[in-house]
Image (cartoon, rainbow, N blue to C red; front, side, top):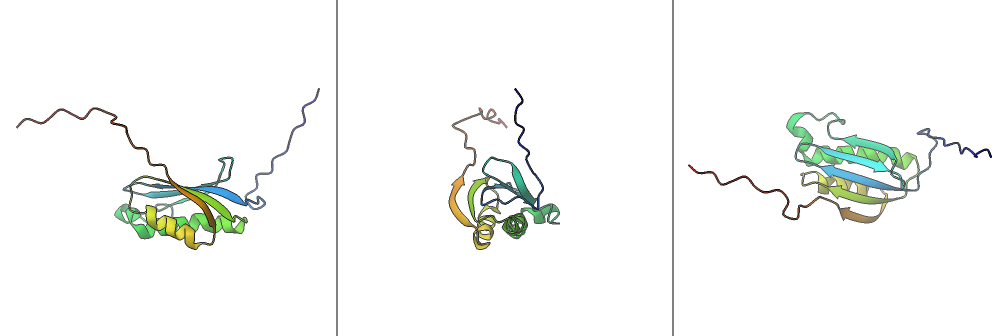
Length: 130
């Protein structure tokens, strides 16, 4: 029996993506925005460093806003109408990146904070005696 091989066309210009998932990873040093389709394949990404910010300017809210606008601009051309947002990390750019995505015209179905929180994880170092 011959298996039917399904051809997958992965050219960036031809893919139409009506729904997607936007991941915002906001650390203290940088903000990374990754947009995937529903299956989890990366469609576009951007970061404050990739937008041309260097050093301490990468950790600013304005850099996060610029990175979010760059990542979303590609998706609007591909026809994205609806998105889910997953925010991770304690960085200063998390709220500004979310505002930039909301302003872009993409309808947000939900926003979820997926920052990992320890349930009293590692044991702290012993007290310092001076």
